[in-house]
Amino acid sequence: MFRITQYLQEVRNPTPIGSKRVPLGPVVIWNLIRRCNLACQHCYSISADIDFPGELSTAEIYSTMDDLKAFGVPVLILSGGEPLLHPEIFAISSRAKALGFYVGLSTNGTLIDRSLLPRIAAIGYDYVGVSLDGMRATHDRFRHKAGAYDASLAAVRLLRGAGIKVGLRFTLTQDNAHDLPALLDLLDAEAIDKFYLSHLNYGGRGNINRKTDAIFQTTRRAMDLLFDACWRHLEAGTPKEFVSGNNDADGVYLLQWVRERYPQRESHLRAKLSQWGGNSSGVNIANIDNLGNVHPDTFWWDYTLGNVKERRFSDIWSDTSDPLMAGLKRQPRAVKGRCGECRYFDICGGNTRVRAWQLSGDPWAEDPACYLDDDELGIAPGRERVAVKPYIRVHRAVAAE
Image (tube, rainbow, N blue to C red; front, side, top):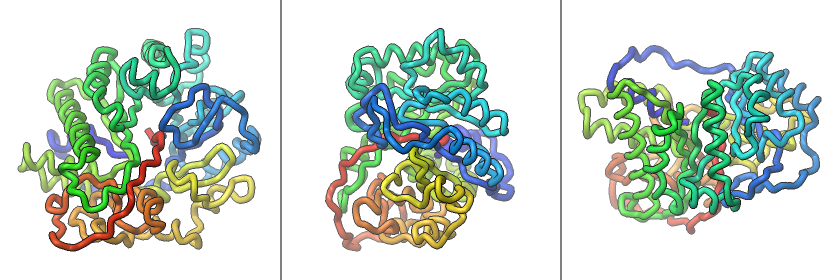
């Protein structure tokens, strides 16, 4: 996750570089249940309103939670499916809070009403993220349910009114990008604390110039909107938390944004971004799915590292005999193509590796979703690259917030 507000604050009020903080354990995004009351068109878990066999029992969840705590995991993001459909969601959440985790809830919001609100408030979630795919017409179409937008927005208002930190979660696609300005206006109108933009995992642009490609133009415009909105709030003394996920090239694009506007701060920001280091899948971000399978992050559901029913998470996560985990934990990662030649590799870290793996079968190939041009990245022109066929598989991003 890329913390836009944090880095723009460094532009306004620089702080000492200091040493890089390395957490003991990863942030864990935990898909407790696959069942969902909606059927969203960009769902990575392909959820449905049915029971899925083989899911972790509550006892297995508790024993895994104990191992996570002992391993130094600081954050649990409870997700689904729709996590509020889990019959023990409040018992699980309460236990997580009692153990001292930062606990987030990732929900579509449609089940939150006045009768359920007291139980949510009693848990003391550190953060609740509610997904909106756009304004009313767009959201209801994406979610395949009339009234979903109104129900989700009502949930946001209830949560905010109860003093619970709440944020909007938006997955950017070609089909909903037009609603982003209105969503940012909604953020202000509803006094919402946080906005998370997840990039859809498009890939396969081959050798097309990224400045003129339609998808990459959309991405650049969206990030400009986020940077501008974040900056306006900082300047007005009303900061909001803006973050993005699933495309670590955002850090490089922010550096470019700052270079054009506040060049005197470029070197400081470059140092801070290099300290961040970009993608941390398999290192500081982990995923456990509803069956107990462990993945490097939520987009690696086709690649399983082990199962907590058979081995402790701590043992699975520490095991670098798996070649993917060994490569993800390597510093620096051995990436190829544009990523290997990029002068900003220290900022991005080669971006999420899953897109390269899905397109080419090689997790260390260049990332096809980097939306910056060769000259922006300091890559020498003229080298012929191997084009890959377009990849239109879509996902819903569930990020660690």
